[in-house]
Length: 354
Image (cartoon, rainbow, N blue to C red; front, side, top):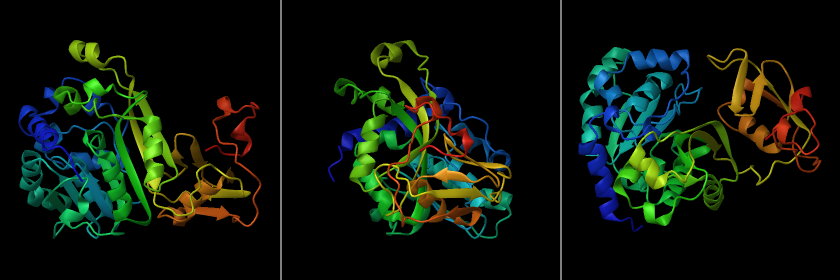
């Protein structure tokens, strides 16, 4: 792997010495509004020290449910904000591993470790912070098939070798494991002349993936489908940066993907359906798998084969009843929101869309 040292050093300087807090960012790309966090996450945030929170540079809230007892890997953990939230959600029997390459960020995270554990009421730490690169997880001892959930918050865009990052993610995830991350995406490819601009890079813009290139990259590393959970536009709100890169539209996007051999490259119809049991904590009435799959408690919903696999072959399996198998194929599953369906059919009558 040949990653330019100068680019890494520039990022370390930007996040280690130039930025001393969220207020030092020139745009809101690295601190885009994350919507309303769940009550559990709001409660978890109340127990985290202000120094950790004040040096937070995320663009979302990549913390999925059903984490109790899980091994969670936080890529680009910074001062540990999301790692410490995850530590509370996994409980004392879980384990959270935070990885970052910036000494100054990790120093903050580690300085608060003992105090945070006391606040959580844990008798032993369930968080580890490791210095290293997200493209080279094997070098810091992250083994194959060892992680239940990988999270990351506005960091993957900074990597100069995103294929290596995603290859490592799917290497370390257990079968059925989940990647759940928030990042800055671009609606078109960022011009090459801007990709080495240190400020644009540090502000999470120059390295933002074009959405279709992201889809192609995941397929290249063996993941045939990812789901968008939320997406909102980013306003740059800074004159000089707008002048440089304002031709590109940017979005804060939260994405989930699973390590499943059963996924296909398009949604196929096997006549399957799924019923949500209403048992996921903080989701008693409905569960959103993504931005267009809302499962109401007790209501059967037609699903494609990929959705059926995501619900029945992962840690969500205990919370759903999936009916049917893949013994009979009925052709492609019509996979678009109702407003985009070519026949105009309303899927609210019991079908789902992928």
